[in-house]
Length: 315
Image 1: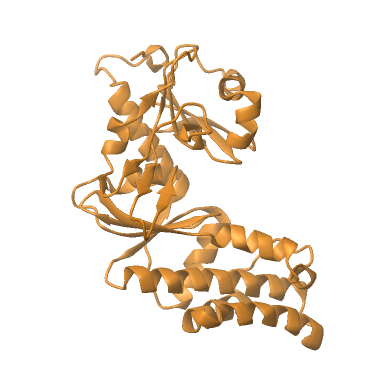
Image 2 (image 1 turned 90 degrees about the vertical axis):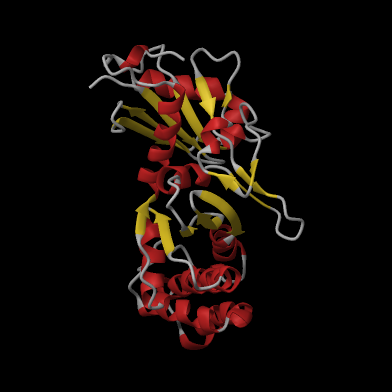
C-alpha cells in the first residue's frame, strides 16, 4: 500500500512519527526521545527528515504535526484557539511551515483564558479531534499523562478543561523527595494491588488529607517495614485518587467520563475508576491522535477518487 502522508506527534520530550496510508492505517512507525527540547537545538527539520529517510518516505510526501512543534519555542508557532472552540476549527487554523523541504502543517493547541482558570494544551486537542468532533459528541474526557487533562466536550466543542500535574508530581516525589527512600528503585505499579487500589479510595475519600497520607508512606517504611513495591503503588494510588477527586469536584458528576489513554497509564486509571465504581468507556490515545491527524491531512490534501499513488500528493 502506497503512503499518503506522514503524521507526527511532537511532545516536549518525546517524538512519534507514522507513515500513513489513505485509509488511515499506519504503514510504519518510529519513536524517539527527540522531543521539542532536543529538536529546538538540533533542528526540527533535521530531526524529521532523518526519520523520514529511515522510513523511506517519498520526498514529496506531506506532513501533519500536532504538539509542541507548534509552541512559541517550537518549529513554527500555531497560536492557541480560545475555548469554547469547535474541534473542527483546529484543522482550519493549522499553519504551514515556511521554507520546509515538503508541505508541513502544524495543528494549534487550545487555551482557556479565564483569569481564574488559565490553562493550555497542545497535542491532546488532536486526540479529541479524532474522537469527539461530531455534533453529537459530548461528555468529559480524562486524559492521563505528565500533565493530565480533564476536558468537557459539548456538541463537538471544547467548552472548558483543567490540567492536573499528576505525572510530574509523581516523578518529583518518587525521585527527589524524602519518599525516594521508601520507593527505592521500583518503577512499576501493579494496578490490581491492594496498596494501589486502597490508596485510590483513601485519596478520593479524604482529598484534603493527601499531604498527610503521602508522608504515611515514609512512616510505614520506618515503623512497619513497608516494602518498596507497595510504597510505590501507594504513592501512585494516592496521586491518581487525588486527581480523580479534584476533577469530580470541579466538573461535577453529571457528565459521562471517557478515559483517553494507552499503555500503563490506561491500566492504572482504568483500575482506579473501576475501584471507585465508575464505568468509564476507554479510548486508545494512540488511535485517537492518529484519527485527529488524519482528519487534518484529509482536509489539507484531499484524496482524488481515481488516484491511489498518495506518495505524490501535493497541496
